[in-house]
Image (cartoon, rainbow, N blue to C red; front, side, top):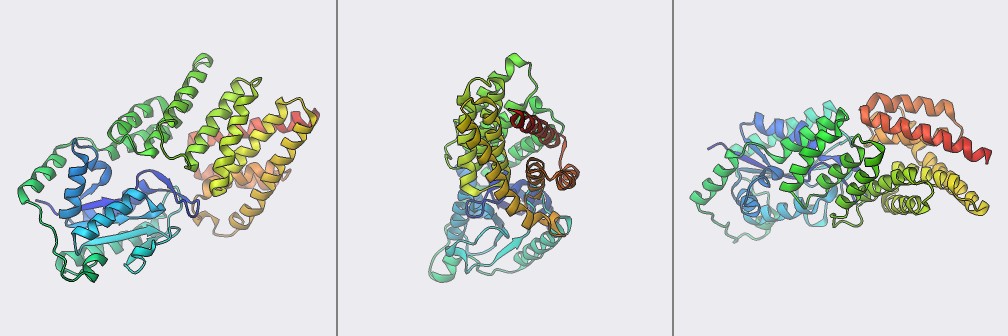
Length: 412
């Protein structure tokens, strides 16, 4: 049987609650972990691939007990990853490697354990950094092959603790079932992302649905399904139906304080308000959602959407005092975002900053709204160079709408 490396980590894009930094963990797996593991001669199994089996818990615990190596990425303090790391430390004295993104703070209980950090750019990992981490992981795994060093703090401090035993036959049965599967959740999500890159949202929906069926409690998959649902091409008569379908999907999420979910809800209500401009309840809901998301992590992209919603509300309310309030609110939000982002993206090496792509889009929008067109053009071009087709379309559509709103609001 091949040696197995079990990878414990979150899936998709996750936001670190402590810093507000969002990173695509699939890029870590795809560009760092899996290439290193395979090159060392191990079979690489990620937790979402385990979830592609009928007996999820049985497979997961068996691999935590018996896998030759476990790599645990605790970036964004994913609760499932932390729990599974704890189980591994309790059942195996050695051969566990912990990694994390630089932005993630090490929890107190493992801050005396060796943790390897890497620099994540948010949407991806730089080529040089990916190669560095691959080399580090290969070095650690080669060392583990020929050495038996205790790396579990549980066994380090409790010297008389006896490692639990698992029957070899039962383990082989479980691993055999994993080997027979023909399509993992990871494969489904990668296919979905490719369709999204090509703006084929209807096709992407089919794969996100399958991923949700296999992992019904994974919020990222539900979020992506909702995103594709409201972005799919539709005649005017179906647009509102798809938007409401997306809202229903988000209602299945248990994480009420997730900024990503608030952002998606805000986007859906914003679109509904455009279809029903006389119904002010929709734009009020959009403002409420974006405001909650913005207050959670002060994400500038969320803040810019909040400012846009105030501009839109200004265009449809009749009360002069309320119009003034909306205009001032939008300007204050953008001035704060401009102040914060100008200290970051005007640096010479700004392209190495995590999540810089959407920072550029947001900064460009703020510049246009605040009357700094030349600077707005500069950073808009930088965003266009780093983004894919549907992201560019989303940005340009909102820019055109914002220009129309600002011009009309000035006249009234």
